[in-house]
Length: 391
Image (cartoon, rainbow, N blue to C red; front, side, top):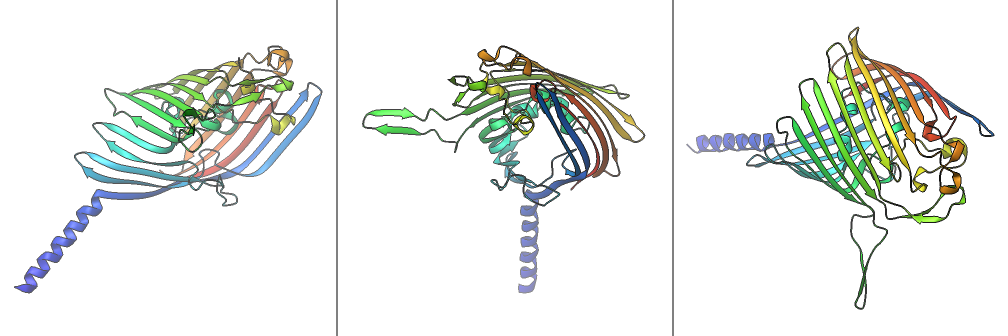
């Protein structure tokens, strides 16, 4: 009888452990992407003659190399605790993508519910990324020199797409609609109060970042729109020896749509920047020896455009895209503009992706660009091939 009771208790314990394990899960995932790439940038204008050529192993072309942990625990009543910790790395050397961060891509924790949505805290993607229909991870967009960020910029504090010290709420999908709200702060995420007797003062250099996004997806149609405002709380000096000024808050809004006709998929996008650009994906100082910083032109404006076409071909997908950005940087240098140093950006890109399996894809690509970083006459071209494996 005692053995029977002991066996029953043991089975009950194992069953309970199985239920507990089923209620909590942690997944290891990642991307390994490498190949061969060639690129050339040159500027032979404005009394400048430069040329930069690179070739060799290139990692993270189709998608950034990463590994991460993603977890979920059932809290009952449809509520789950969730977390993500994700690190980027250089596949050529094995070094971390950012040696100052343990988890450079994402690091957040929060709660999620199918009925109430998801609330997370930490380092996470801006709402504009989630609403970016054109580059929504479907494998039919440009990359490297053909990436949209060469014209549209990258939303986010310090010119990245991920926001430190941020709070984010994403609604559940309702009739195909979903909204995203994010707020983040600079520095260590705190508001600092200086107290001296009866006098209080806030830290005036504390930046903040806010963004909202709206997504609609129903069948072959997807539409996304976003608005971002970032106040860096900084004072700077204009280019060409201009006087110092306090930066206005940088604002950006984008709208994009994609429609799958089955034979071909069409994507369109338009965006606008004011008082600066949240990341360019290129530093002009690398090519000119002088950093022409558009954020030092307080009246900066740009209009950004994208057209993309993709179609199934021989078991894979063929993509072609064009990105363009026009600006008012051709204003007089005395007013903070660049004068005849400024040009409008145009990038052209084509790639072909072929899946060897559900997890492994091989690809080939080529790109050409004019007036990169708004620098008149700065041209670029690149070509390459590679392989991506997702795990």
